[in-house]
Image (cartoon, rainbow, N blue to C red; front, side, top):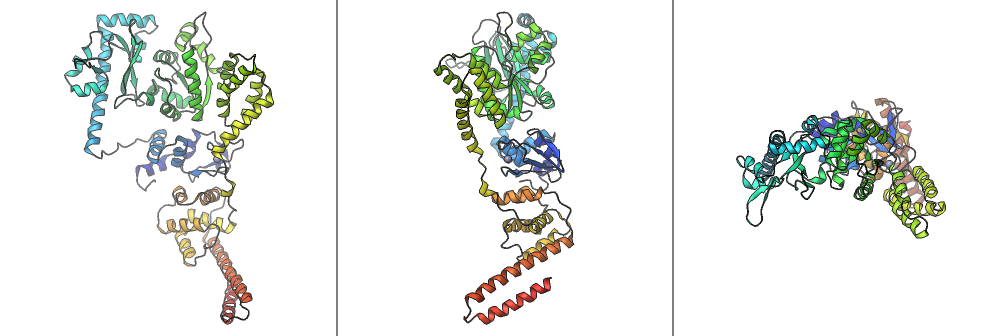
Length: 588
Ligand SMILES: [Zn+2]
């Protein structure tokens, strides 16, 4: 966990949990805390709280709780180091370069650095080809025809791969070994002759950058009728297509600021939308959206408008994306652009024909995904029972993913009206599906233990917070074994060890040592509004625990006396009883 002085510790000190959680959950100030709907279980009224001073969160519904890292680990389903990195990134804290552990690792890092450098040079090469060669001139004419002027070409780093077959190879060969050239994916090897040649020939090149803006791959469109129309870089040590979104490096600030992203299919669409002044647009690079891409996006927003092509492939891709986005708890809207004349409109064409303003208007009016899906279902044959069943089966998986029960119910009504499906039938199916979903986040009532007594709660708070006397308090509790037998015994045991170690008291780290039920109780206690504790108060709490201890022993002795009325140990028991009664009197 976050060791004192470590990078993780530094991030934790600087990160504001309210801001980080606020990127995932709509939070409202409520007293000293912030509250919102728990992202970990479905609920209609908020039982999720964030404590800005203690920098912890807790859900009074499902019992999840911890610090900023445990929150991110749970949300992003990632490990601790990844959570530290995400939080650091969200808070603009520079991440130190990881230490290279082995010679192999150093070699790999060097290779990656060389590949990035090679791509930078290839990018400069392609740009130059477009600018200043005869072949490039024809490519420029083509781009201009598509509405891309010199300014746009420069802004998006569009280039041209010449037809010769080895122009880039000859350029790069001076500096890089053959093996590395092949690994870059920019150069291919002919299987029969073993000869090297350029992968991209006679194509417009679009530079694909990673999140930090480094070119790591190219997407290339054929200039003529060559097939395939689009040819991309293969997977390489620096590029994995499911991890990269086109235009993400330039879009991320706007996405975070506006708290939504527009997802389009191709480079040309992303460029057209960005040129229209809407910079929060990314493209899935022609491939279907993959989970790592959604996670990448999810670091900046949880709201997406999907605007894919209106053809069958685009519709299928849209539906697949909706599913994946919902699984990652995104709020999804779908923009299906109206046809222009008899032409189906992609974003590029729409903006060209109707202008940026019309596109912004369409974005604003884009319906929630359920509306889109209902419209799709209505295109099915609904005249037969069989057809209706098919439409319902099409909708149900999506409907099932709506976490909010009230919303789900509203949609059920609308679907039954629009598809003319008997509402009770629909609801029965929906309830069944919803129950199946709920079972994943079942709340276990047995974990909600009896609440601890006020004295215990006060002492726990003081052990956590009273820096001046927590050590003394821990010692007194330990010496007398005063916490033994309490319902909160295990919490006390963990707190005492931590307090005596003179380390800062970290709720999350202590919580990690506890069973779920105790973890939950500790966090609930930490969220109670209270006054600062004093030593006098602590002493009176200790006194109460001592009394309780004596009273308990007294009760035991009394039981033994009654059970052993004629036994040999009666005298001893009676003596012990006298002692205890004296001590009890002295405590008052
Ligand atoms: Zn919860």
